[in-house]
Length: 378
Image 1 (cartoon, rainbow, N blue to C red):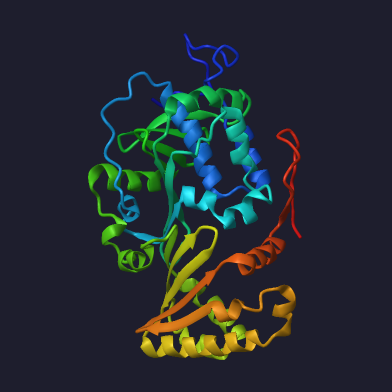
Image 2: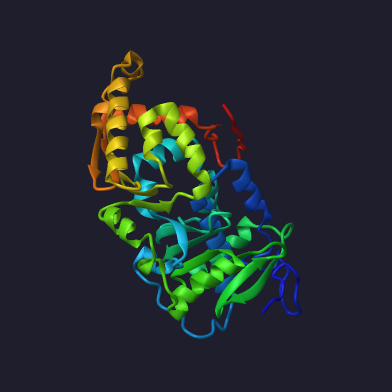
């Protein structure tokens, strides 16, 4: 425990003699940074590094605790934002294909697949990302849990080919009784619940996750966000619920004033946002904003409806091929909650994604696995 994986111990083989060993995380970390890969890529790479290390441990210790099925049950009770993504649905969706794969933004994942000879994400079930923090530091602590069924032995065989002996130091450690790895510097940790889950974040955050999973500490299932989360999770491939930090209220009101004065007047306190989205060949979503009271929600709905009607009259929408878009958006109110629902498919979704892709930093898909590419801001 605590010994550096980077250092060579007595009786251990050199990197050349032990191609499955882990020696450096820097090359892939740099690649992820250059290619602006998603949190999904970061979580997977951490899982590959960590699980491969665990695959070399002959004595795994006591049996790992059970990983809860519900996403809320793996998140600490004090979370202020929770995002859950169905990994398979996301990667099979048109959104991923058009906004990520076709733009080359998943190159890091493809390199891992090329190196390993199999898809390391094949048996990943979902990724849960959450934020802990108060009004002064709303993004002070970000953690994640990647759940699935990971083949540590196969991952161990491929990682030695993916990493070289130059770079950042890794060391073995333990967090709340769970085997873990840490970088030579900084406070980040990856801890492992058998072959079923990877926990990531700062030491304090990973300890909090481990206490929830292994020790029965209060989870987000009994927290302030639970009811809003459950209202939008049914049938969703992506679920998000978040408290808006109080320090963001002034900025939100200024942005709302530019859109419509009625929207600004409705924002008397930070709203609670919840979103459930279905990601397939089509896209449908249910976005909800819980405002201070029913009157504020009705004022916001009326202002947003007027704004949509004005947008629908803009001839440029027809020229862009999205003239139907305002008609597909349904605005309703349920007590203090403003709801925005939409369903997009076919040519309308394709054109909408084209416009979104054009607004993102440009990234070209390379011609082959050995061709370097970079993202250039447009």
